[in-house]
Length: 329
Image (tube, rainbow, N blue to C red; front, top):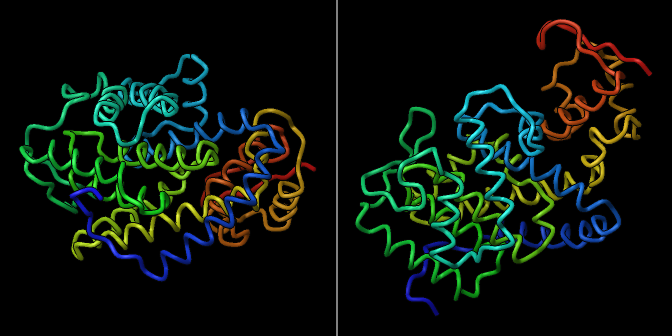
């Protein structure tokens, strides 16, 4: 057993979520095997990168990040383009890195933060805090303790017998608590949890958990704050497992290939036809009302609307708040 044991408890909620995720993974694994996995991975890689960067204030759209991935010229703030290019490079190296390796962790930070901070690939040398907007959520440990704290955490990750689903969440919280780098800690924590999960189950190379976290980023920071106040990462574990369960259910319920077909063909599937029918009946519906009525995630509705607009089946007339939809069947 490793000498360091992060403080957390296994609640009934955590056990229930683990069971639900395990069941969903089994069903989704079969579904993915029957579909275009390589195309799906590309679509979801873009959604993952866009979601993780958006949490940090990056304004690039899914279309812009797709263009950067394709090597096309994009008109946008240079720093945001660099963030996207670095993130693409980092997520492309997940197959190379080992989650418990200090060297790989530092290399990942260097890839992610090159040309963005002077200390890319190096632990911070000064004090730093976790921010939510203008609010300080947490003041991190002193810089002199970072190297030992990270070494202990990675040793625990390597030797503990905690189920990977839970261990990945514990690591993510503890990493944010330590805040080992001057910048890039949030995106590194999310990248490394994805690495841990993908090394446990290949489905997580296909599923954009980060895109769902972006939609609930206030809850994300709230869970960090609650865990810090209680000296127990259970609130954060529950939040992250809920995000993982929800994105698995979304992928399964929407049809995994639904995202793959975006931009590939102009055909309208059953769910898109239902959306068109709904908008033809209620053309003044806002995006938020669509999400509430369809009980789909905002990213799913936005993805379908983009496809329908591109195919000429749907058009928005006027502003988001006071305009209306124009449907062509």
